[in-house]
Image (cartoon, rainbow, N blue to C red; front, side, top):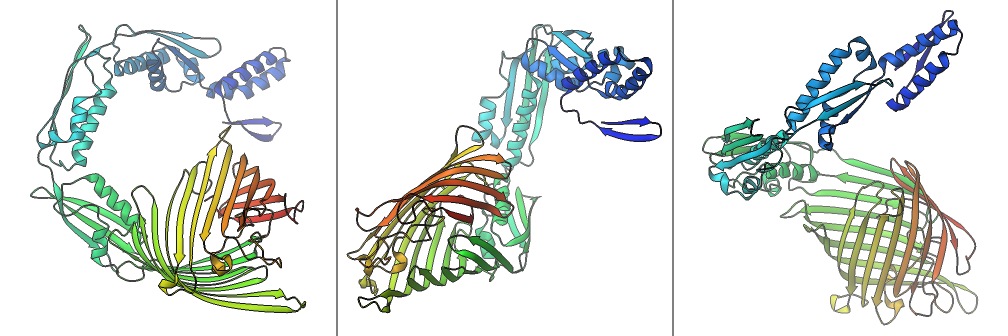
Length: 614
């Protein structure tokens, strides 16, 4: 609302946002009371200023009929009435209200309702409605003639319609039943269906409404010819994306699913699916597709107190070949770790849920005085089940070279190098759900994994390694408070931990493990104090976050755990405050962790990292 006030040639613009109509009415009444005690000249000026408020304000309307849904419907029909409308012609407003009362009550089964309308001094309207007895549904005949009468979905509507004999006759129930029948017939391919009888016989003397709603379905259509207009992909791949076959009974939900499958495939910049009714009860399907031709680069820069500055470069080729393969490669560089990986994915029988991955990678990682260079080549089968469980079965050929610097008994620096070759079959099962991807406040993630190697496979070593991880978050106390719990466990079956490849041992510490401690600095140590890693892992954390602004959370956390070989080895714990910024590029996490155990106890460490809860 804009009010323009002019004083001695100066023009001021005052903008008022009406938040609450009742509040506005109270303020206007208060100002009027003040005006009555003001001098005449000032009173005239203020009245002129207040006039737009009075004219443009809406009236508060109260309806009382004794039936809640009727009150709501009457108010919805009446809508808004301005104060100016009443001042100009209150008789016209009265007639308008009565007309809306008739429409609103008829729709809900009440005919002949009367109303008393009172215009109150506080510029509100009180409407008292006397309804009388409602009209009830009488004889109800809802049926479908033809082959569609055997469909379970149709039978449910016919057997239990919204229109029930003896209940209040509400018009929306009739319209909704008619709409449901029409939509179901269209969905299941009865494209020649028609409504043969559609009438409501109203008898006001008997307060009864008889219904006749009869649909004739005709024959059901089937899927006909399916064509693809596109360049770059083999039609056999596209046919595997189809949730139906030519000649199958038509179902419009399968067409909708087909559109969704094409969009989720990641192959297309644009995908449209058109249907066309043909003779002989056939529906042809035409898919107009524009295949992605571009290559994509992903560049990322980050920082973590555990790894220092970090740079990442990724390259993606979404459609690498006519059979739908995709090629991705990544390179990441940070202080403790440098790695490069390449993955070529081939879609299988079910392209969206099954794939075969060919992978190769190289990693150079330093943990304290040990440097590990790992080269790997592998193949994996991925399968996502209908229950949203992701299954992955893989086999990798790994070559690992470890070099460790230490001081010998004579105080001289020495370096030992060990190289090993091992063939590692592995399997993992994981599942996750969350209510929002960028900043979830409820959900979970669970993962099981097992991998191992044996000399019978040509490996230099023998071990069996199992892992389990779970994340759970939920709202507590209030919608703004989120509780996060996590647990990571693992075990290695091996005679000697030092015979297990260094890259497969367990370590703890860091922003993804036990905060307050350096990255992978916790684990079993030998007699000289050198970090060698553990056979077992138990790490957990609890965190409580509270939203203080739309994009900010703050909270507290507690982490504890250990990577160990002997049960006598100590646990390490930490506590501290946390802050979370939900930035446009993801969640930025800031943690101030206070270690409670070990040499670092009492010395805080700041952790800055980026990524989601899962």
